[in-house]
Image (cartoon, rainbow, N blue to C red; front, top):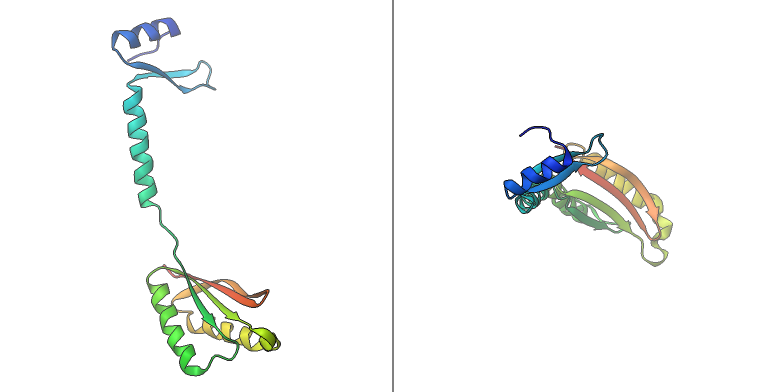
Length: 144
């Protein structure tokens, strides 16, 4: 198109039956374009929609243990954890302490560290076991 002073740019936009849109107001002199503004907005929304669709959504799956979870239950839940991590979901494993079972904090910590070690091939520990109230929580990210 070319470089025009403001009055001439407005006149040119009117002749073409298009809009004069300010692209970069902070530049000296301000940068404007002669375009169809509604089409521009439509294209911008379309681009945003595509970007949003391509954005990866993080799925968080939870696995709950007791402080004295037996071997069979542990293996069963470990299989589910492996499946979740292979699907690309983030895993939140936690030990829930009911009533006076809080005295078994060490057992819960050991259980979560054992799970982290068993899942080493499938995911990476994001947050080591941490006690929050009556729950000891550990987060594991899937390996790409």
